[in-house]
Length: 188
Image (cartoon, rainbow, N blue to C red):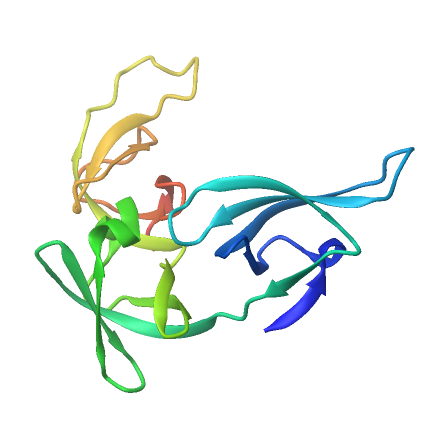
């Protein structure tokens, strides 16, 4: 762990503040006409997800935390738990579905994910930004609806609903953004 000054905090940095682990979401350097400059930082708690806005002066120091990143392969779902395997040591790791959140629906057998660890304890997970899925249901095209961008609802093979362009039909494979849960393009 390294001590950094409050003015050096940048988005993506993980710091220890008020006894908790926080990730900097946004930073803004403010130089008021009177008084010293400070760094306005929006922080998000890595454990419970709460947000906090904090001012850090350059004279203040905080602990920057280094997280270990490990690659895991998704194996299977077991009740309310998701089981992953470390690709190097073949050890298994169980994470609650709530830990992964709504993006757990995008997990596929053998999918590679990156788990953020702090002192051997998982505190975050990142899935691939895009996945390819098949559409199981799609509404028919409504003729003459060209005045506005006419996206229609569709259901993916994992049960998630997305809006797709009118030319997409059931049975087609599409690429979906896992962060925004939106249609990107047809799969090649």
